Image (cartoon, rainbow, N blue to C red):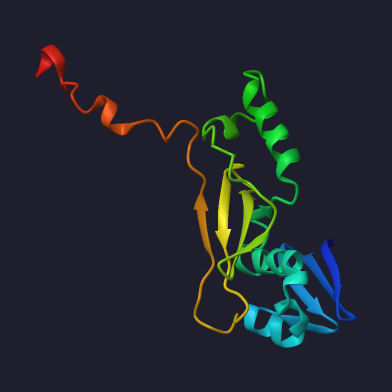
Length: 173
């Protein structure tokens, strides 16, 4: 038996776009055509090159690049509240997430073009680690690759020189 789950749908310039998980594999349909790369995606739906469709472009690029391994963070404020609540409780059942972080979420924002590059934020599905994502745009056919960088840990911006004069090893050196 084949299992199909709808993950995301959009319409751009009258072209329906559907993202589905079919037996664990992500399938992106633009109209009745399946696409498997950013180049094929923007060829099938040229309107995705316009900034007004940036969020849809980022979501689709994320699915093409990582399948369902990363979830795009659509509402930064809601995400911050949920993340803080999860990390504030020692009795949380999600112990995996407490093994990482806490992360500094101050830079979280909605998807935006920064110097012509789409920047958005996503969370790893397995460890719930937040990442900043840079996507190739609008010339998706170029050899650019998407980059996923984990956010800094909270408190990482401490003055690193503060501990520079401390001796290493103490009495055991």
